[in-house]
Image (cartoon, rainbow, N blue to C red):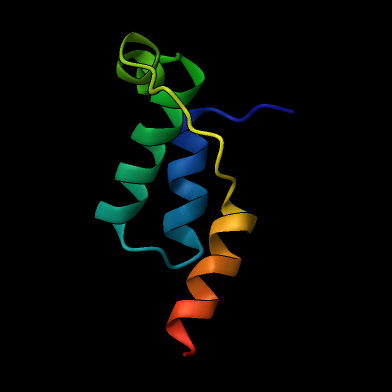
Amino acid sequence: MKISDEDLLNNLTNAGMNPKTAKGFVEMNAARKSDVLYEDYFRNRPVLGKTKVKDFAKDFAKVYFS
């Protein structure tokens, strides 16, 4: 089920969210739905390395806790 941006904004503010924050959230969600949010990422897609977060976390923990 989809709700309009206006209904989302009203629901968020009625639930107690700060109106300015709610407006920003609704704008971000609209950008996500229209793919505007991802345009720069897809234009400048990073080259990912072989290190995975779980591997990095193990190495980081060893250094942090030593």
